[in-house]
Image (cartoon, rainbow, N blue to C red; front, side):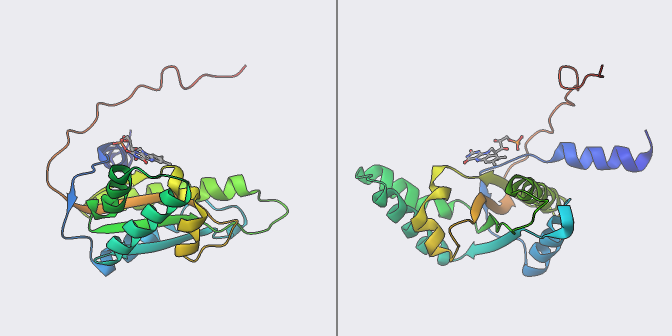
Length: 189
Ligand SMILES: Cc1cc2nc3c(=O)[nH]c(=O)nc-3n(C[C@H](O)[C@H](O)[C@H](O)COP(=O)(O)O)c2cc1C
């Protein structure tokens, strides 16, 4: 294997999720750099179906209120559950909301646009890691809530595919052992 491939593998393999995230968040320039990496994802007919929104500072409290309202709209009455969800956005200094904004195209179904956006998110996660920060990709049923979509100014067909929590790492997570391709790859016929 050539050195470049080995180095790229090491970087990909070293990415891991961490929910223990604190200040500081990446700077605006660093975030822009990570988003630019995201925008290089494979994208059939270059539809650029992805959109990203950041939530930082006190806006995270507002976001918590939106998540709470979404659960209330769904019939949740347990005050502990409601309190818990309203504090979730405070788990990191920066939340990147990753959205598919589907484009009508005769040859590119929405499924492909979702996959493109997922690939963009992975590129962003890798770049966040390379910049020295940590992240975790979260979702949950709440992403489909009309209350949440409306609060973020999304249209009905838009799909939230991730709340990516980003911040500084407070601990070192050991790099995963290399995973064998056995059982996942076979030759046909
Ligand atoms: C689309 C998507 C949604 C996810 N949603 C959540 C979530 O809501 N909560 C969570 O703890 N992990 C969630 N995960 C999993 C974590 O992001 C992470 O990938 C997993 O814990 C494995 O850790 P690793 O990334 O270090 O391999 C999600 C992953 C994906 C791809």
